[in-house]
Amino acid sequence: MISDILNKISSIASRGKKMFSVLIDPDFDNIVHLEKLISLCNKKKVDFIFTGGSLLSNGNIDKTIDFIKNMTDIPVVIFPGSPSQISSKGDALLLLSLVSGRNPDFLIGKHVEAAIELKNSKIEIIPTAYLLIDGGNKTTASYISFTNPLPADKPMLTAATALAAQQLGMKLIYLDCGSGAKHSVSDETISAVKKYTELPLIVGGGIDSAEKIENAYNAGADMVVLGTVFEKNPEILNEFI
Ligand code: 1GP
Image: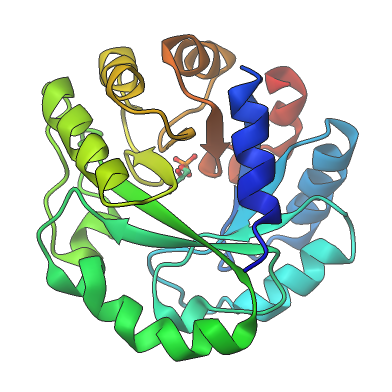
């Protein structure tokens, strides 16, 4: 299997460089904002554009990727909420195991449903440990997956969970407080995960300021993912990179 995107992420992380990714929700339909955002992604040399969501109402993953790819060469990584979000148009897909939860559907069930289609799509698959962390409000991801997030004040529990996922062979760790979370992942949690694991570390959910980005990087995040903040104001990307 080709592993271009994973190799790229791992090589950047191993050099101690930080990555910045923008999440585009396929449901977000403000075309003017989207065009502005993607132009800024080009200008600011954003590393990756993620797309996908816990729940799509009107959005269509193929159309969203076409729209993005018409405007940029930045690699598009699918961050799927369900098997219906598989598309061969993306450059890679995060095969998420929701290891913070104990719902077998999101640990293996959905993966079985998706396996053949994923193989046929020929898209690069990146096995990813996905950990939901309590961000102060109930998130769609937690509600849809019937799982509880990890407590925000138990960094060692999160670190042990991430370490177990690494020992199981996953290739990336994604700590997420969920879209639009009140609080982002704490520095203590990020540092604990970084201390116990060697995999590239992605952090997202509720990051909405340059200070939070800086803190996440300093605590050990290799990549931050921001989405909601750009839906309100794409121009704010200028202040972040
Ligand atoms: C959510 O990590 C992403 O899964 C991004 O979160 O939309 O809060 O930036 P925000």
